[in-house]
Image 1 (cartoon, one colour):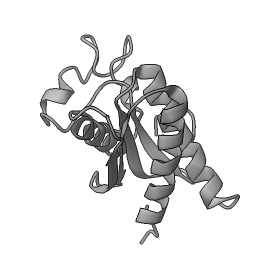
Image 2 (cartoon, one colour):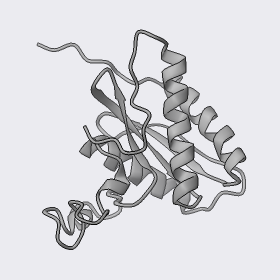
Image 3 (cartoon, one colour):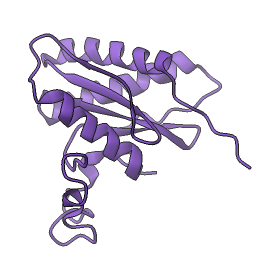
Length: 157
């Protein structure tokens, strides 16, 4: 039997608040979604003035990152698994509307375990990446020294 950590609303709120601050600094109006390790939404927020399509896209990015344990932009890079020559070409068609293979989704990895995902939608790729990594860094600060949160953009677990 294995003991597991569970991401909770308190941590999701910390991440969303940090993401909103980073969004303002980046000049983007983002939708931010945090999901658990099963891909279910814990918290989601669309900033005032954010695109109406943002929440669904942020949810898909978070779901994909959590479920496949990798940052979503890693799927479609040259030679990536979802590229036309990759072993998973067309994977996004398997779960229409739920699977995202573009920038803005990051698994939440704590002490080597994927405990959830975060999806960011509304800015360009650089803005979404800056906002997502800021949220991961905020989680590390919130949890403290007893935990190791992966905070790089290129996460593959």
